[in-house]
Image (cartoon, rainbow, N blue to C red; front, side, top):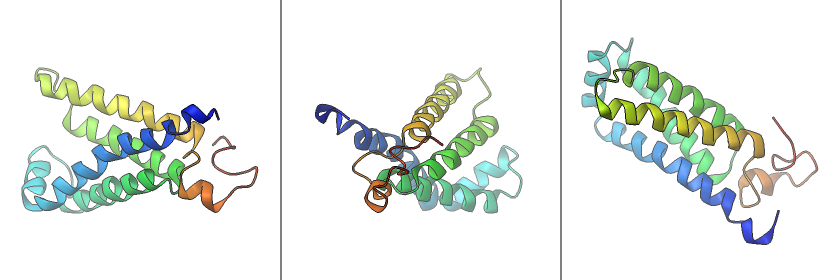
Length: 140
């Protein structure tokens, strides 16, 4: 990797992870209101679904931020983004849903790059495995 581009992957992970971490924390601090909202739009077992969403958003976001098992985190966050889009953002009569729909599609695209290219040099994945099979050098 060119020295001038060494910051791109970690900065990209920071940018991608922030939305998941902040969103998850927002849901956690308004747990009751979030369950009520999820129930109102027909999410089955809203309380359990919210706990799973928090694990995915906060846990997956932190894994992505730190560069730990980023491919697994990216796959999980893509799944989360697709499910969130299907449950909450298909009403295109509201502009906010259109924006959220395409934001989630864009996030999924960015996460696909993480799956393809790994965590990068400044990551736990790279620190733990400097072999030729490291996440930086292998393709999922």
